[in-house]
Length: 493
Image (cartoon, rainbow, N blue to C red):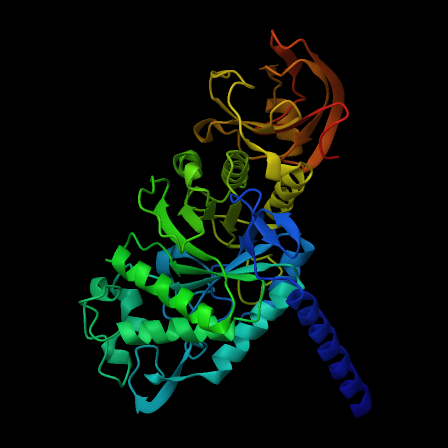
C-alpha cells in the first residue's frame, strides 16, 4: 500500500509538472495586439468570464480550493478573484452567509508570520510585518498553479479599503495587531503616501513578495486595490503600488497585467496610467463604462456584481450587455461557494446581497461560448443595426464586424424582468418581438440563441436589400434573447 501511495504521489507530481511546463511555454496573460480590448492567453484570443467565490479561497484554511477550481473548470469558466490577506472580514459582514472572506476563529492564514506576543484581534498572536508566513505563500502558489492547470486566470487583488471599523480592527496592518509599531492610524489613512503611520514600506514589501512568488505563472494579473473609491485610498498611492509592481517585474524579466478598479457603475477615466492595462468596474449595468472608456484601448471589465437579489436574470443580463458592449471581462460574485460547498451548492438565505448557482454558471458559460463562436477580435460595438428605440421596456446591444457578422442581444430592462424564470413561465408569460435589422445588402445566416437555457434555437436565412430594414420575429422568450447573423460565405462558424 505504501508503494502504491508513493506511485500515486509521483503521478500527481508528474501531472502538475507537465501542466506547469505547458503553461511555461506561453508568456503571461496579455492584451491582444490586434485588439487591446481583449486578452491573449496561451496563444489564443480570450474574453475572461467567471462566477467565483467571495475572494477568500487562499486565506480561509477551511476552503478546499482544489475542488472549487475543478468546479470552475467543469463549468468552463476562466476567471476568479482572490484577496492577498491584508484584508479580511468578521463573520456576518454585509449579511453574507458562508462568507469565505470571513474565516472562523483560528482559520485565517495570511502573508505575515505571527509573533509570540498574544493580543491580535482575531484571537491569535500578533503579527510581525517584517517576517513572511511560508505556509501562506505555499498555499497561494498552489492555488495559482492549480488554477492554471484548470485554465483559470487569477485576479490577484493586493489590497482592499476598510469599509468600517469592524474590518480595520482585524487587519494585520492595524497597529494593535502587529509588533512593529506601524499602523497606528485611522482606517481612512492606511492607503495614503503621507499619513499611513509607517505602513507604506510594508505594503510595498508585500507587493514585491507576491509579485516575485507569482512571477513564473502565466495565468495571473494584479489588481492594485479593490474598491479604492471607499475608505480614503488615494490615486497617488495606487500609482505608487503600480510602479512597485512594474519595477519588481522588470528586475525579474517578466510582465503581468495591472488592473485598476475605477468605480461602481461607470466613470470616464481622463488620465490613465500607462502601467494599467485593465480598467475594472463593479455593478456596471447599464454598461456605460465601456463606451466612456473604449477610446483608451484598455480591457474594460465588470469584475463584481451583486445587490440585485438572488435571482439569476439580473446578473446574466448584466454580463451579456457588458460583453456585447465591447467589454472583455466579466466576473459574477457567486455566493453558492462556501467552505464545505466548494462545488457551488451552498443553499444561501434569501437575505444574501447577491446570488449564484450552477444554473447561472451554465448560463455564463453559454455567454462565453456565444462570444467565442465569432471572430470577436475583429468586432466592435455597432450602432444602427437595431433601431434606436426598441419596444417599451427593452434594451438592445450589437457587437459586429460590419458587413460580415453581428452578435445581437435584446433584454428586458431590469425594472421589468419577469421572475421567477421557469420553463412554465416562458410558456405562460413569454412573448415574441419583431426586430427590424438594418444590414448591408446580401444574404445572411441567422440563428437564435436562448441565454436562459444556454442553447441555440432555430435558424433561418435572411436577405437584405441594404436600403430597407429586414424584419425578423424572435422565438418565444421570457427576459432575453440573442441572435447570430453571418453573411453567407464569411464569418467564423
